[in-house]
Length: 158
Ligand SMILES: CC(C)(COP(=O)(O)OP(=O)(O)OC[C@H]1O[C@@H](n2cnc3c(N)ncnc32)[C@H](O)[C@@H]1OP(=O)(O)O)[C@@H](O)C(=O)NCCC(=O)NCCS
Image (cartoon, rainbow, N blue to C red; front, top):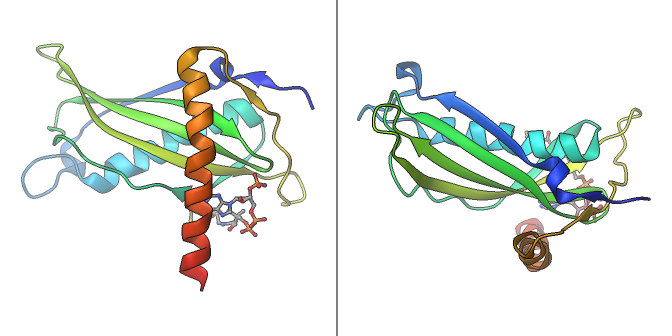
């Protein structure tokens, strides 16, 4: 199966933080950010696999700064590495103040998506080929994260 460059999966997703998604302090709900991370991750996974995908897991997430209502949440995603029927996608979340133009990094997350074929069965995904130094670094680190992730899944089962 021919591989595809990582750059073809690179995706951006933006959404304005609205009052309907505010917590009691007037900041964006963490759960809303998690929803956007899942969507942004799915975009990169879909772009790479060109087949339906399901979220198998989301690694831990930190929220470094609150997002104020009226700010723009901008999410960048790309495939880090394909294993067989699953792939790791990295998502970086930034927030832009629309008045000052200031941006800040607020969260990062790694998600695993599994590709599903027409008959509902898992399918093999084309390899993602890292080209830049950063893509190569992410590719290497994704292997270590997968080992940890699957060991945690095993622990949770037993
Ligand atoms: C994700 C899912 C397809 C995995 O199915 P499964 O029967 O456990 O299949 P397997 O154990 O053979 O795993 C399939 C692949 O997913 C990977 N995988 C499974 N669970 C994983 C997890 N928790 N984290 C990371 N990867 C995982 C496996 O390593 C394997 O990858 P590979 O083919 O690249 O080696 C299945 O659990 C599922 O459909 N879950 C619901 C998905 C969903 O609805 N998500 C939306 C949120 S509710």
